[in-house]
Image (spheres, rainbow, N blue to C red):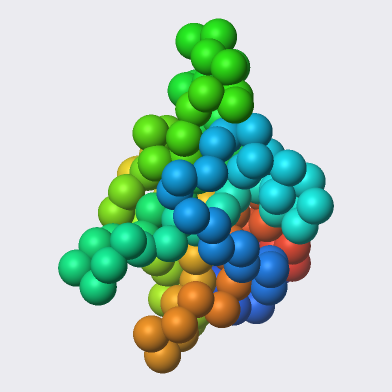
Length: 133
């Protein structure tokens, strides 16, 4: 018999640690921050009011630094980040969050509430913090 799933939204399962960095940092420096903060993605700050936020995640480092055999200290984050940043509303059902992330080929996204980033959600957190599993 199927059990009825309890509604879970992005805010229910998100990681609360949201880390912002400058796009001029190197990939090596970004990884050092990821290790220290225990996160797998970082939000890249806007350069000015007309600019957009960006994001750099583990898969960006693999695809754009490790596989092409680039030296991490020679690659700036702005070269490998995804921009503009796609955000997830805090109240969005996690099923739709997962669908959105897969459709836009992202691993994670910031959770937004009242115009502020309040946390991060990833495909991993959707599975590991989901009451369905």
